[in-house]
Length: 270
Image (cartoon, rainbow, N blue to C red; front, side):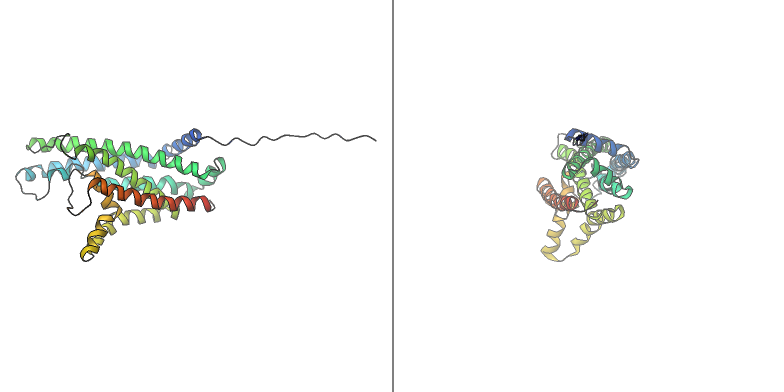
């Protein structure tokens, strides 16, 4: 009797990519879509350009005391509209992959969804922090040049200036992360943009119409109002929370939405 022979083939399971490889993959995806450089260009033009323009327009009136607002409030004025670019960038970091189906390839290559989320968050927040700070510094230099010519310039060492410049980067990074978290929940670009922009620009203003202490506290606690105060040397809204207190509230709100988004992301099919 002749015994048969069996050829055993050993198949090696592919090694899981490490944190560095996952981070590099997210970095490459982030910078190889056209929306990224366009969003950063819009952020810089809106943030630095509009700050310089508004300071040029109001410097004379401010010097003559014809504007009933503090000079420092205008030094990061353009960041109000630059928020839109940060929200767009944060949203597209997540929803663009769902729109193209790329998310399935991402999760096939990196089954550890937590690692994917951490890498996306690191890439998004680090780039927005740098871009927001650079934009705020450029806007300050441009706008303060016109204020200096009227004798009302604000030195970088004056109270609140350095905090506002760095705070601009911190706030835009947090806002982008909030948009990405909402993107994880709804997985649709238009829906996520509508929710976050509506929350920051519409609801954040409308809650001020609520009567009494309800309206006052609702205004203070809305994400855009609480977080944005750290990005302003002085505020147009005297009833807002102190800069770092407001930013702590804002971070807590972002953390809650991000935790819910991460939970949904890890349990729902791609």
